[in-house]
Length: 342
Image (cartoon, rainbow, N blue to C red; front, top):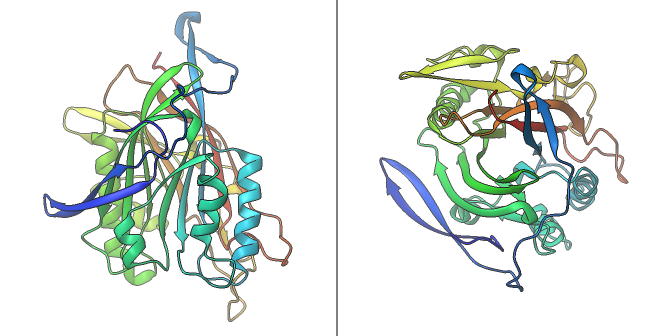
């Protein structure tokens, strides 16, 4: 594994009946100096019996940036401005497009030129998906100054009619309390009512990885899940509460960031055509749903840091120069406190 300058250069193999891509990493750094991190205050949290447990914070952004609307350049530029203000450590994106819609290029190339080529973020995407399905795909960015190592895995779902896939990054992060490992997952599940069976299967695969992962994990994605679909299948994940998911002799809790941070009604529906009018809808009824989700799990190793969403909010709720929102989805930003079990 390489520690600096991450850009995907993939090779592909079929393993255990599913298509994977283990990425090699091409070193784009221009310096051999050791990785340094800007100082941040150490966050301490009270534990049991008055014990003080040091932890670290991780800011995560989730956003479906909408490949299909007009004014891609202005909307993506607006989105990049928001990223610059929020400074997330990890960004999960869906519907990134490599198709040029005008002389200024595609959303993928604009994001890459302003956030990756400038040395701010490391970019991870499945290059075969980008090549064969350039219209839209998932992409994960990790802030470069905190990233010490990464082992990428790209999984193409067996049950999909829309080339849906999963990015799994097992990464080392340099934080205010030292170097820690975390598993980061990003996906865009099957769309439309007809995609229910495929969507549930994709959801189950993500949950299986999370509950078997030794590291703490955070998943972000446009799940397209309806509330009733979350309750289908062999995993019960209630709409608005944490849940213990049994697996073997262990119980691993999978938590929803919105529920964990207080389940405020104002931040429930990230895809809300009643408020966001980027898309035109026929008829009087305008749809809304909580498709965008952030899930976390503590992992199977008991002495590792565990994620808890302490805040959860929307971004991208202001119109840009073209009188449009950056996307038809509002972005999610969650601040996770990573603490030792007390």
